[in-house]
Length: 202
Image 1 (cartoon, rainbow, N blue to C red):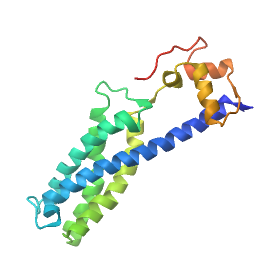
Image 2 (cartoon, one colour; image 1 turned 180 degrees about the vertical axis):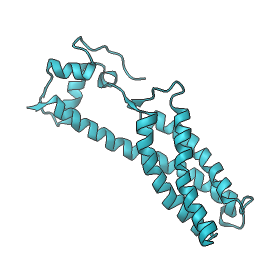
Image 3 (cartoon, helix red, strand yellow; image 1 turned 135 degrees about the vertical axis):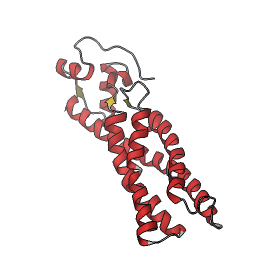
Image 4 (cartoon, rainbow, N blue to C red; image 1 turned 180 degrees about the horizontal axis):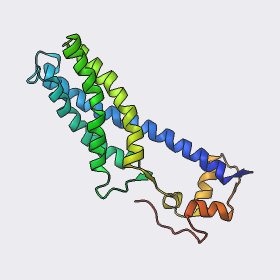
């Protein structure tokens, strides 16, 4: 017999892993869009100097602002679909602020290679900003988004509809093991000892 609390912990770990994978996929899409725009503006799609070749940092900010708008929508609808924001605007302002702060990481890498070391090739720009800088920024953004933007997990009863449905889902996650739902367990899930409502997450 497996107690519900143990299975809940397992389900939370599984959910965290899913969030990390989805976040990486969304980040990949947004980065790809920003990569294309940045290289079009600065390096003319690797066919010669682009219109902003002498302004790589403003070009990087423009390209990644577009990528940020894409990633916000996908993050809200998909990556953190089991979490909601307590902000009136759905967390958009906090999302923009976090992106602006964490964008300093790749911008700083680009500044070092361009202005300090003096490397201005397409390879140097992309390695510093779109590889090293983006990786550092993605790690920081994941934890900041999860804490300050989509900070409140949706209750399991909002997802499964009732304590009984949650128990069935936990049983399935455990490979068919029996789940014991005590009154205390019911209260920890629903916030009340009363029967759970059947409201579902939209």
